[in-house]
Image (cartoon, rainbow, N blue to C red; front, top):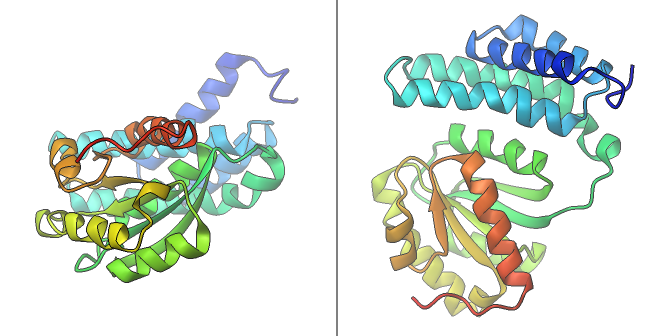
Length: 233
């Protein structure tokens, strides 16, 4: 049965079960369930956003509430990635969707944390963005080089520690000195970020939640393409 002909309640049930497997840390079951969702005609973007990512979001909420701890979060991430192995190859050819924009994303230098970035990348891809992952411990000059090479709409600065978040201002300043600041919008991401502080350091916004960030990135891209001037620093 195609996705168009499937009972919405049945589709929702498939996606809910997939999300539950991420929360339950079921590494064996998650790939089978992801494949079942695809076989049922659900789009890869729905499988990621409403299934795998929904489960990971629940894990994040439980972590913030002190209901689970970092070892459980890391196992859930492994489960999440196992599901992505089944879904990722289908994202572009199956959806045929038009890119909403291009972004480069990397964890700024001095920070080697990868979990938050690795969760965010497929969330942004599922939302329709062409994402270039620069990895971790990315130097300011590497961000400049990537902007020149890939010509993105948005630059994502992963800052997962307070100390590295405070370096974001220097990264933004390096981009400005290279004459590239007006070409891009910059958003900081990670548990240590604060939107007001990020703006004081010259960025455009910040978010500690990848799903919330999707909406903010969309508004930043719209502003950039509308030719609106960058907000006053």
